[in-house]
Length: 203
Length: 335
Image (cartoon, rainbow over all chains, first blue to last red; front, side):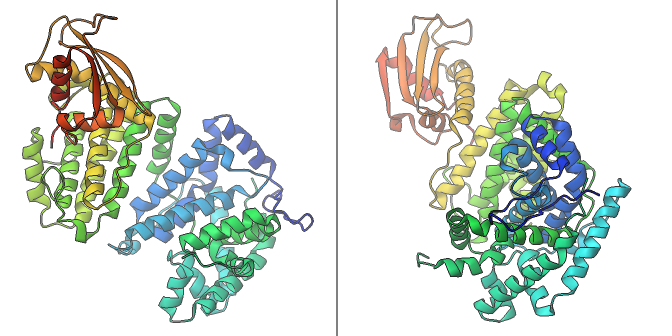
């Protein structure tokens, strides 16, 4: 597979990813209103977007809504995805996560993911896509596994639990500064472990 | 919080920012920092990549219907289908209003006499009536009379959790959207509020009611009104103008052969020649009267949220038909 994501070299210091030929092409086609391009993005990333939203929100309906919003947003405003500035997967992940967290924070007062366990863990039309996703998931779990438990716990609470670092501090009964530094150390470590893997989603 | 944060403190927040774990004011400060100091963008992008990779651990095949949901919406967005877009946008706004309604607000009394919770039930009753009218019923209460229907819904959902009411409403919205996404709906005749309507008019009419009711909810909670965009309000004003002759007839105020010019000002406004009778086209160029008012106020008048006597407006020409128009305008308002 060709190298795809974020070969961000030091240099001028600005974030400059080297987009894959596919991503640059997809960006161009989306801006031209090519529906088939969105289909390709969907087939490549719907498991990623949906799985992330489902993990954060904990129920299928909300995860579907957020996933739908993400892909429709990309369709309606293709110019906001700039392949020069970052990988499509990061862009989709950032948007999906933010929307999912917004969703959870709105829901928070009433019910807290009681249906999480009911989320259906099903599969599978495209074997290759699934294999890629599973291999990736495996590696990411391994990367998270190298974190000291307290960093991992803080990251999971923040990222999957939709908590702010202050809420993480409250929940773990630690000072805010400690919560911030656990998130910082943990995320930097994940970044360091995963960067060599960042060619995984080549297309 | 308005305390000044040094750049160093904000840089420390970059990882929390990448994890969406900052408060909104902090997130805004971090974004401003990134605009101010582009050399930090590389680190921010690296952390964003890492966060997205953590998300990848959860990859899971979505239900197959998600793909068609996405593409239905994409096609509606692409097709210039303004009525379907309006319906979806208003439903989204209603959903947010419903989500924001805390249990403590449920008993607040809204302008139409219902409590806030009952109003949500009423909106669900309305939405499910439209679903039923277009042949996609979602409830077994089939009364077409909206007040009776609302009463039966209130009874049904009284002892059930609020989330059930919202879920019932959502089912109806989904049913209507699925119908609207089906190309055959373009040819459909829909009965709504006792009037035969085209698909687009029915969608606009429901969106109009949704706007009014979500503003009812905002009002009782002390929030400012949030009218739709100018383009959206224009569709609603247009519908209200189309139904004016029937409204005059319903209220016994027709004037065969006469015409009024209605000028609605503000974003989404426009100018309409309205025949003062159900029969015949307007006699172009010879209106008996010109009525001028604000487009949003006109819509609120049609929805009975402003009384004719309260409406700020000007009249040139024969005052009497103008006043009758104002009275007739709300003939189709329900609750």
